[in-house]
Image (cartoon, rainbow, N blue to C red; front, side, top):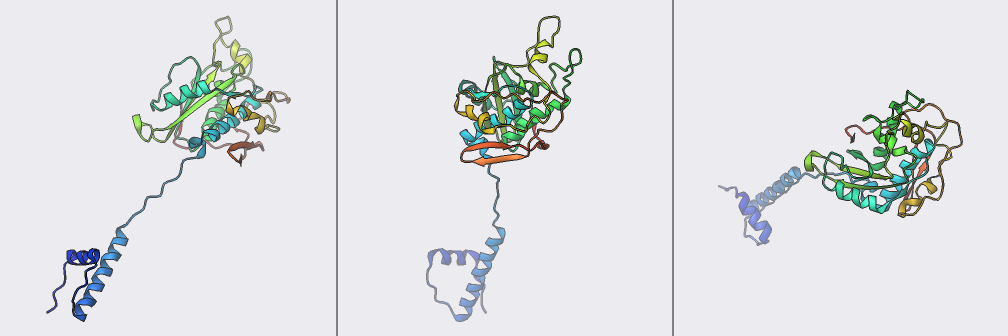
Length: 278
């Protein structure tokens, strides 16, 4: 009577490649058993597919150009000059981001935080689209500073000249999943006046969105300050002011070697679900 060999027997012979003296019936049984073991192993094998992070997070030049491109588009739409990249601010932001703290650093510069966005453009748009909640009508009805619109007002603050940002993939550290973005601004925005009109500085520094304000936006000039130099153009729209809208005024991104330039067609942006700003 033929006795069925054990699994260990087959594995030993498979690994050692030892030739066995078997009857034809035993050889047939062995081949079938090994095939069964191989098939079982294949069925139990699983693979994990991961999505690569956006190069806006992982490539330093793409990070700078995408941040300046998105930031300066909003500034263009609100009659403010382009920002240039500030390496000192970027170093501070990177160091703070690496701590994965969902709280402001309370440093000397203006600061915006965001986490959970698929790319940096989406994070900037989340800040910029707060303008839908901001009232621009002077003199008594303007919003001034509020938690709901503070990211937007810092983003377009006219007296701010430079920005530096840092990112870090927290991966659950301190309860923060995904990428954390920290941006520092100098001179800082969101400054309240101590005079009779506490919102005087907001009247000067946060202006209404211009009509068709993104049309004519020069993405090349907007990202010229990516290496720490000065932006080469003053971003002031010539159209008259109008009421704000919730759209970001963008349709997509044109990708060139190591640089990002906005393709503007005055569309509407979508904010990622499950992402946060602070």
